[in-house]
Image 1 (tube, rainbow, N blue to C red):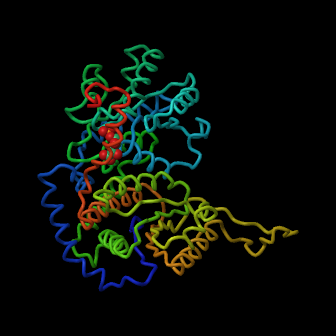
Image 2 (spheres, protein in one colour; image 1 turned 135 degrees about the vertical axis):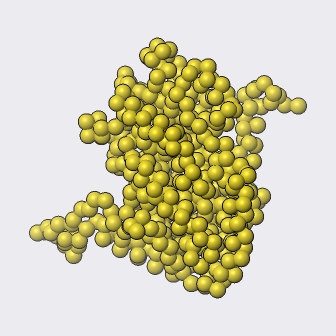
Image 3 (tube, protein in one colour; image 1 turned 90 degrees about the horizontal axis):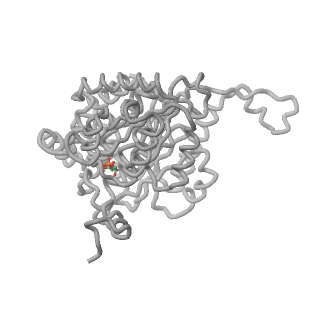
Length: 438
Ligand code: PA5
């Protein structure tokens, strides 16, 4: 199937025997995840591609259609797991300069993100960019109390009410939050906003295939049926408990074995700039899931060949505590041929009739060779092309790999206690009631 992800190990030093020594442990984790899934929180994503709420799914498509029809701009308000997945999929599957295209060409609303930082300049510039165009907003927060999106939503509610009046504003505000709990749920109920549910057994960074990601993705007119089909294919494929036949589990094992050999930084590499936000999503998924109890692989990202001219030197010759996971897209969606030039002053005629895609792949091959020879182990994840199915597949692949990897590391991959520390200090400094210094 074209939607397949194939794993390749491009380094020596860890052989099949060493990998297979983990088979028993992986099988235990496989069974533990499935046994707990029925009862415990935060494992709902494991079967989401088959068990998702079909009624909610249809409502998402219906609202997305309305938004496409009545809005020039769609503002997504959220932070962390509440926006990165949507942005990752949207930017991977729409034209590189989507937001800059004229409306007639784009045909769907410009999609802008806010509530993912505390910068007043950013918010101000965003409002200037929106101008007097028609918009809808989607505030996404599971807890409903996260400060960044809460401030942005307070601002945009007022903005919408001033622009449209309370009644019309209500028809353009979409809320994605917990089914029962939180300030956002209370507010949505009071104001009768259209709401979508974040299932309580799915945590933020595992939630892209719920309404959290699906509504914005669908507004961009990306086929969410196909996205779910890709994830479903992956769910079936990686339900194999035997490590020998499960590339997702192999990836989890490989990164843990590398970690034991002092390779404690993983760089997720792409040669396609459209995957920039997919890397950001992956960084959050692994960083928040594994970095605890003074343990964990630090997740970093790089875009080649761009970063070969910045990080390349360090990767080749700096500290030897790195490994790379390369996403290789076999076929680019568009291709450009290099033409013959009579003068050949740039000495590029040797590339005549070759394509940018071919040059990009040769650069990849050359870099993998150079880095592995320089003691930077490389794992390659090959995929035929970038489309809804492969994105769905990748999302499921990394979510499952992250859960198994966290379990191998003996941390809880579903909590994030460390994130609270800065918040407590910030609330104290800001004088939030209940956070007074003792
Ligand atoms: O993955 C996570 O759980 C976090 O990154 C959250 O998504 C993030 O902190 C936003 O939380 P909330 O959706 O409650 O606003």
